[in-house]
Length: 279
Image (cartoon, rainbow, N blue to C red; front, side, top):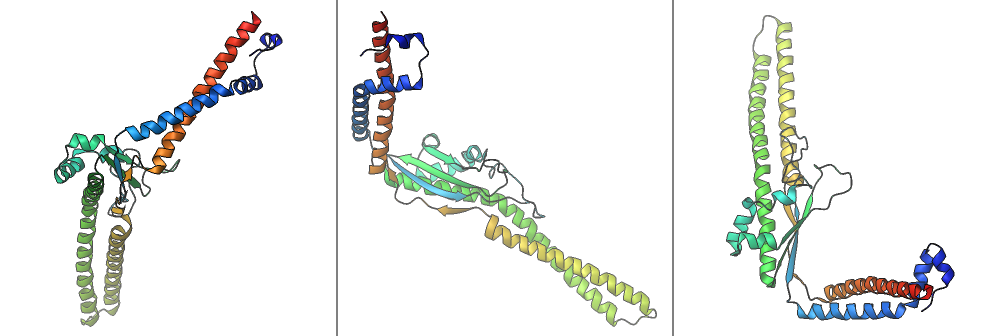
């Protein structure tokens, strides 16, 4: 290969690099083919592993008054770390017979987060576990998803208990105030205006108690139906590392790396040729 000597007196442009790569296209093509074949061979040689994946809704925590709050086990930023704690890993290890360290090493928790979103938005977590046995990969993934729901559900149950106690308390207030209103209406009174004012005040308190009870009942139903954690999808047939799509992906990535290496070699060869021509 030869390069015009005048090109050594000016800065190289992208067009110069493109021409150099094109002249060394044989090197590039050879590198791509070799890398792709190596990737294909590697996909057959390496041992097969299986990956199970489940989707879990972490829930949306609220205060007893209904305000949405962000907590460690629902926050998209830190939830993956919290959900790998002993409170979840140890029960899964006991249930599946695997060591806690093995579960952590082959476990993946990913939580997609929209750019700029607040930490208290509803959060979905993808739970994945990889193992040489398909049944184990599926069992551990599902067990982990169930344990997350149990762990998070206990925290939501505390909020539900507060709401249930509030409902019982307000039901008692409603019953008591209904009796007060009925008694005031039927009791003889020497001062009708005074009795009317007492009845009006009791009715106001009764209305407030009924409103608080209804709000607590609505919030309890909302927590149970919309904000409580739950499993969206369980792990079905685990994905094999030697499946067709994964093998194709391995070959494509290898070919891409080969193309990069080939272009570097082509540029290096062109540069050596250029220096030789300049000499």
